[in-house]
Amino acid sequence: MSSQVRHLFSLGSRLALCAAMVRPGTALADVGTDHAYLPVWLAKQGLIRSAVAADIRQGPLDRARANIARYGVSNLVSARLSDGLDQIEPREAEDLVIAGMGGLMMIHILKRAPWLKEPARRLILQPMTKAETLRKFLADEGFFIERELAAEEDGHVYSVMQVSYSPQKRRENELFYYIGKITAETAQGRKYLQLQNRRLKRRANGLSKAGNISQANHFFSLAAQIETLLSSAPA
Ligand SMILES: C[S@@+](CC[C@H](N)C(=O)[O-])C[C@H]1O[C@@H](n2cnc3c(N)ncnc32)[C@H](O)[C@@H]1O
Image 1: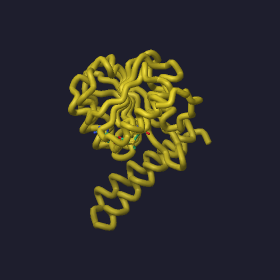
Image 2 (image 1 turned 90 degrees about the vertical axis):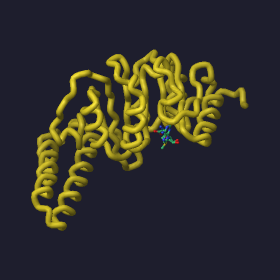
Image 3 (image 1 turned 180 degrees about the vertical axis):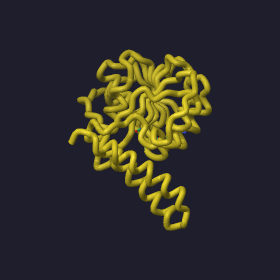
Image 4 (image 1 turned 45 degrees about the horizontal axis):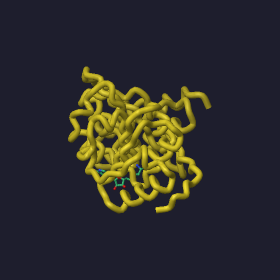
């Protein structure tokens, strides 16, 4: 193990947005950490009290361990083999990041940790797919998206959600499941809305070709609602 401590790297805009939602001084769990860039960066900046960098696979965990040692933050960050939150104590996850995974895997992980249902805990979620299914799951389970922003990196646009448990269940309107709290106020937000608009229209066109006109019209109407949001936004 090298004793040389390297200069700190920059996080890409996707992980930087996740990092910005982590509360200073928190005990952090980064689930599906891979390289552990997020907890290492936060530890180097003095922004967290402790972190568990968790991954289900040995290869990523070895990468995480190497980076934790390379950047000299072993006193604050520990790497742990864990399927989701299975090997993580509630006290180690005041804030919890799950980034770069599919929305369905996130749901699977969240369902197995009922102790997440405490208002003081903060979940920061960045799904790669199925964000709409994740938003519906969160609403049905009493979780509330307090803040949601889009990040753009390498030509892709991602949603990052800041979530906490808020005991009354909410019924959101269907459009909410597709766009969450992302607005057209930022360039990244507009790109996210444009992406969801294209996806909804593609789905509507498929349904239309299959002869399912009423369902097609439903999705065309959701797409049109997004167009209205885009057209009333600042250029
Ligand atoms: C694409 S990487 C994301 C790395 C980092 N979080 C990021 O956003 O850049 C996804 C990681 O999640 C891990 N993973 C997948 N399913 C998991 C699970 N159930 N529990 C823990 N880690 C998991 C994979 O092994 C992989 O290292």
